[in-house]
Length: 247
Ligand SMILES: [Zn+2]
Image 1 (cartoon, rainbow, N blue to C red):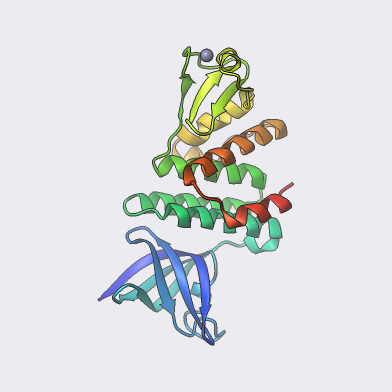
Image 2 (cartoon, rainbow, N blue to C red):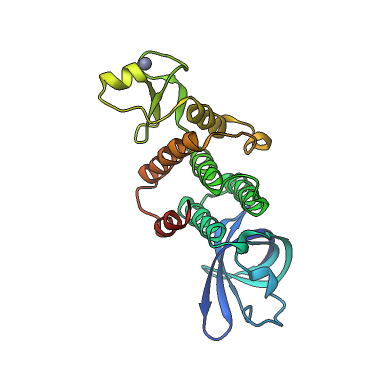
């Protein structure tokens, strides 16, 4: 049976001389793997569309446990990602998160759009890479059913004012006073708390529209990574390397 779908190439595994097995994130089939025969040959019709982080229109034949790529047409190439090691590492890290979440339809469509927008923003170079990393981590987790409880301090109901403690395991907030009683040290300043709420709650088109100071970003970045790792329940290979290249 033949199916047509768009898909973003998240991973390539070389097989034999010039074949590849691609892992694709698609809106209607979720994450799938598909053989792309001959796609490593420069003159092959699948060559361009099989590139890493390429977003393409695929025609696939479904086999027993696996798909085969019959034809592919490039829809979008994210220029700018391959310009720097930092950008490439961040894109690889995002792809690894998407693979571990492995969203099924209908969530796959929203996760795909988030990833496409994030890759676009990496290429645009308008926001710090660390900010894009944090946005992707928190938003992808929220979409995957790990929406933190950010309304107010869970203990006394305080909404804002001063520093807060975000519990990366529980996914909730404590104000500075309640954090002190619970022997936690606040990990969010006002700017980081604002940004945390924005990332998890803003509508799609406003997601990337906020700024925060370098020190707030540092706070939030630490917290969002802890939150992600606490809920994925396993490490990410690409994270260690990414941390060595991000300033
Ligand atoms: Zn409180």
